[in-house]
Image 1 (cartoon, rainbow, N blue to C red):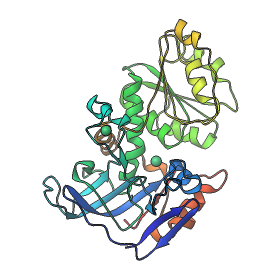
Image 2 (tube, rainbow, N blue to C red):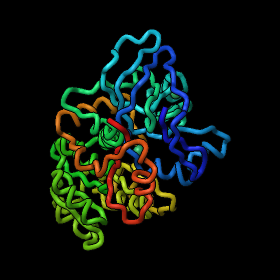
Image 3 (cartoon, rainbow, N blue to C red):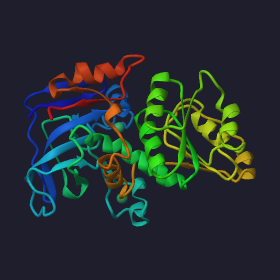
Image 4 (tube, rainbow, N blue to C red):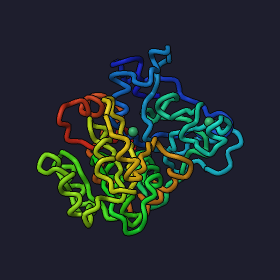
Length: 345
Ligand SMILES: [Zn+2]
Ligand SMILES: [Zn+2]
């Protein structure tokens, strides 16, 4: 089959004779429709941050934000039929480790992942368990389906934020996860203030319903936020930027008794006077990937129109053009793209 195969750091190749996969018992064979590529795919391609190749891992097909059509059923599959359109829930937890047994599947110690540990969606075909292939509602297109993955990350963060109807929430960072988070917060009944450095992203945040947008190039949110929140600061802040000081800002700007949820990964240390969070009874928590049920919620939110992912799709390119028009375009500085869909539909 045709596939984009990563052979090592900075060595991504388009191949036409990669072996077709066969579904194991409980798995289905998917004819992949589209996968969207995100910054994590670019990081893995350029830097191998998870150490896949450093540990001697073999060639891998990327594409963790993926969708397809069921082409063949493995032994014992009973809930899907050939021809069903599905989104791929990419995290495959073990169900038996310490954390899975505690109900904390995002902390699974033996987790596998479509597009990282296992071959993903940037190919003609893929295999994955039937229980992790979510049938698409009629109203959801194959193009929207891969965006269920970043939306599930947003759902997980919003669930972790414990936001309430009528709360004021802030989203720091208006990339794809941030703009999905904005909309999930709105679906949960919150008024949302969006913060970013890019005018283009803030314009889109406004179109998607943000009550206010703040460009940190123009204003200091620390000064402006109290005026927008009855003098106290936002009830909830969800940080998705992963920039140098943004996690710190989330903790600083949230009101006393509020909750800061950190989604972005920053590699630089960010110092905080912990006694302020103690005195202010602030909650700070990390939110990673998505837990059980979050992916179904994401699909429902997109299918019902409560989360609009269409403006987050910047381009659609066929598999054979995935490297020059997808991966290499994502590398350019000041890239004017949110997600690029790769696949042949
Ligand atoms: Zn991603
Ligand atoms: Zn586990």
